[in-house]
Image 1: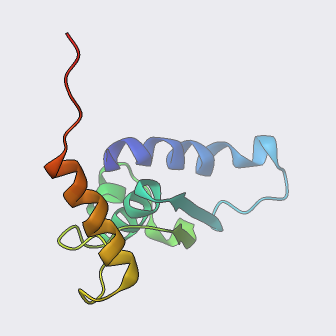
Image 2: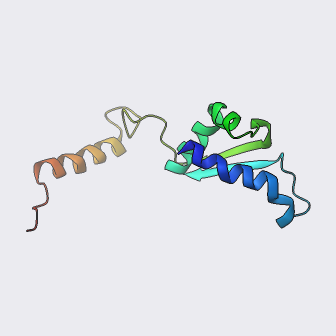
Image 3: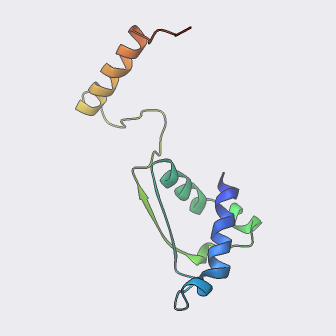
Length: 104
C-alpha cells in the first residue's frame, strides 16, 4: 500500500506546475483521516519507499494526520476506567454475548 501511495506523489511532483503554475513541488503536504492518516505517517517515517520511487522526503513539507491509529493493542489508548473505553468494552461484549443470527 505504501508503494501505491508513492505513485501519485511522484505524479504531483512532476506535473503540479501544469495544473498550478505557481506551485512549488518541494512544498507537498500529505493528509489523511483514520487509516489514510496512518498510512501517510508510516510513509514519511520510512524513506525506503521514497527511494524506490526516486522521490525525496524533502519534497514533503508536512503531514496532516487526523484521527489516526498508532497502536492496535488498545483501541481506546487510555486507562481501563476511561468512559470511552468502558463504552467500547460494553458494546464489544454485547456483540460477543449476543452475536447476530446467520440468515439462510
